[in-house]
Length: 311
Image (cartoon, rainbow, N blue to C red; front, side, top):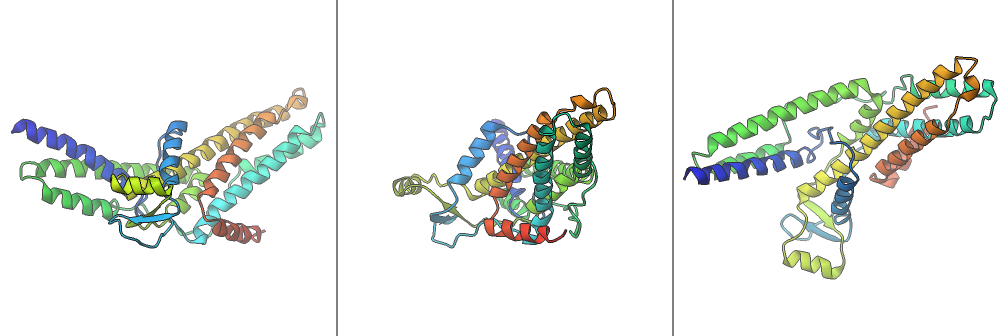
């Protein structure tokens, strides 16, 4: 009897962990702004899950026809990230001039000052936004799912279920507070998180894309991707790309600081070299483009138009 209870408890812990992870991505204010380090294998897996659920056959959780509802957020929520994108694009353009400046010290110094103003000074990407307070509890979908689970377990298992849930919620709160501190220290992170924190998902339905034969086979074998996993994969990919942007920008800032120390020394000013800085900015630009590729093109164009008029 004890062995059976132990096995069920371990299974419950594993299931609860999955529930909590996926619940982070199922509502607007409760999305957790955290992701593990970038991994090409993990990114490929997430892309495969998402690509299997983007357009064609519409399969909701109850497998009845429904209208597809893609992830969406207000255009205003995209403005901070759009300012980041334009800053990176402009930095790439300026850094390319540094590479082509040759031995002209005055031109190099002027270019480095322009890059310093862009990359090393506050840009106020999040101006005009309403700060998002740290939520006090996880998504309602997680709490509801766990409440239903506790009702289904035996009396002996209920205390363990409660302990597991409390432990997960405490871990969730710590992660949210840590991420808020990171946002306060990095306005690029805060700008990108502002959009993802405003994304809305309809977790009751999703869209399955595959060939006709493959769709029929998946339905017969009950292998349709779970909607929560699809949502978690979508958000996970966004955070992986966000981390790529942040890492490349941090590396670019460090390289720029190094080049600035060289240009202040008359003896080494001629050796100021911009290729590595440009390469790092190109990595940031590529990751930023991929991040924006996950957003409706119409919304991106509208956000670019609004930000371009800010002057």
